Image 1 (cartoon, rainbow, N blue to C red):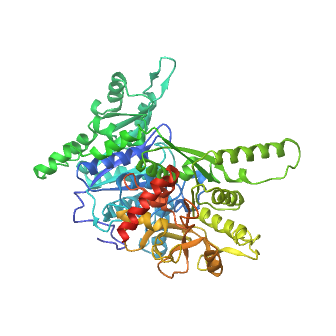
Image 2: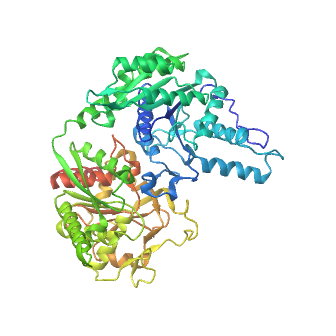
Length: 616
């Protein structure tokens, strides 16, 4: 590959063989491009292809790391430490692959790269312009990242170069921010050749009026806008509450210059796992095979699989989810409960765990700040606060278990501490993640060790018992990409008690997850600036909250804390974010343990006994 000032990345080997499927959206945002493109990838994998994926976000931020969850939903952390759009989480979960920071392209990254080259003098005195320099950089980035070998499982070691690269363009056609990316893609279709480029357009078909008439005009206008930019879609995916009627399908076909068979109905289904099945029913895979010449030169067995994708296991899972009769009720206590996408991976991890236990999931959202006692100040304001507090606590008491996920900032932290105290004292299954883990440590220090002023230095710099401290190597001045990020190793080093047959609850659960290995070391993803203060570890550990897992590098960073099983059914916290590696077929062990405990002590005990037998 060439990477000189005079030459762009040019891939001589396999370059012409890479196939690109691009999905853009129109009319409105939030139609589900991420789920749609992930479903396409799932079908192609079932047809025997290796698939990778790229998300284009047109915002000027370099990455999603500094954005508020209220702005953009959760920040999804990748194994290499990249902080990315939540759609990369959809790709990783559906496709069971590992992506990198480079798989999320932003305007900020592109401009930073071009300006950096200009400052070095790489352009040899040329006037640096949007076209061709920015558009070329976008194309080079896509082509380079498409050829990066990917791991085909969340913990796998084998890497393969993909056959097909899926590209999602964020936002909607017509947005000023995305114009340059669409122009780059217009040029890119000629760079790679028509037989290697397939453009899809996802649009809304609203249903209006009492007769429930489906309207095609928004889709027509969206396609018109896209074609005016030099891009003509080869497939139109129509989002609607109902299946697309034949007359509307023909109308969209006629006005938008695509075959009727390429107008795909993506209507509301009972759960998102039905979407790949919905696309297969409409022969989306056959369209890809035909238009991208995917079957050329393949042996008979591969061709048969291509035309008959093996989705049997996926189909069984999708239909099983619809039939669960028993429900598990989980209180999710957080700061950003106003936007559920802020905790999307946590929700998915809970869902995966309940699916494994053949249960439905009912999430009760609790604002952590509502759990805190606030003296009535005056009039209705104080009364309203007390009403919210009572309602929040009633919600928690009605639940089978509690999750306190990660977050930043002081608001609601004392509420999380109170929730940990309630669960510990009432034997309610509890899982604390990142800040939730720190909250349970603070609670234990305050209530059991009687350090009433124990706190995190994030909230009180002058506290006398700083049980949670700022990590010494972290940059205090710059926020973007400066936390402890990405996949890090944790070793189970300290059993809950001195008994020879004493095993950590989480260690047992990880042993039964084959994707994590069985050598006592696990790899999970992190995103934090604060950690348990090593100065207080021994006192807290000896008082009963056992730090059973510590970082494998130094052994001084606390990663996992839990109460022994004979004291509490499930009181577990982890500094890392296990939700980011949870998969439909392989639920995250900490979440699975929580749900097993919620189902009854017998189910969790059965799992733990299996693990102990394996160790023996």
